[in-house]
Length: 159
Image 1: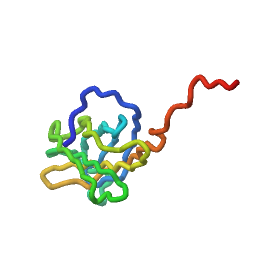
Image 2 (image 1 turned 180 degrees about the vertical axis):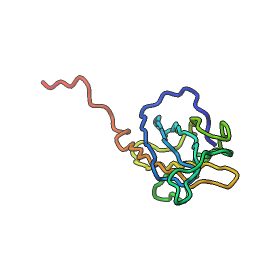
Image 3 (image 1 turned 90 degrees about the horizontal axis):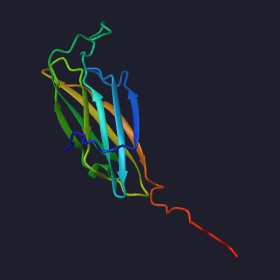
Image 4 (image 1 turned 180 degrees about the horizontal axis):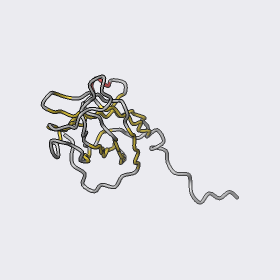
């Protein structure tokens, strides 16, 4: 289960604007940050609830969203044996039926030991009375391959 943020400091913050990656309702942006320790990482994910419905052709803009129930964030490590990796998810009730609020979640500690590089997959969906949207997708490469190297020797002298 994912948790609300608790003021944990973050190391990296990246932002991705999603354009046409999702059908209904549209997602304007997805923000994440990662904090790692010697045995793994946690991730802070932030996104904005959709405010519009998917357009129905020939329209190019969907109507205003009036019945958002909740959004869901999912995450999974995408690596060898990924089918055995758990998919973690959390539903967040809509701020209001029209959406538009920023949702921020902190994931549980995910074991990514030093010396490994793992691609984490995140996706979010929105649900209204008609069902669930297509997912807004985001991947993050967590490179811990150099994390286990020792520091350079100190105070070297040669006589």
